[in-house]
Length: 79
Image (cartoon, rainbow, N blue to C red; front, side, top):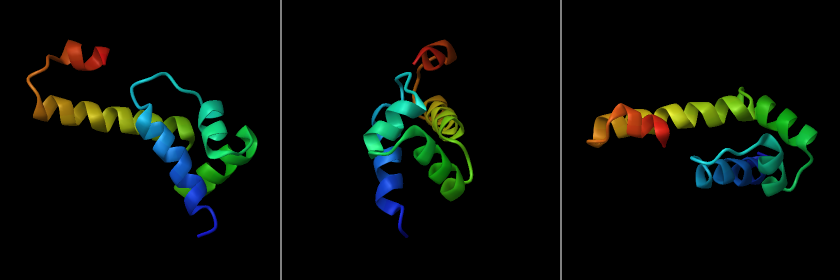
């Protein structure tokens, strides 16, 4: 696929900064594309927006923490 490297750069950046407040602009910059191009290609290829992807990753990590740690829900929500 033409955009494999592109998507990997963007999603790797999201994964590395998962618990930080990052913007689509930062993801686009990490992938080396303009915000417009990055968002269009990401959405067309992944089927969701950058923000939706990031939010879903936050939720899945929180679910792992709930099931796999002794942290309280408040501690998990804070993270």
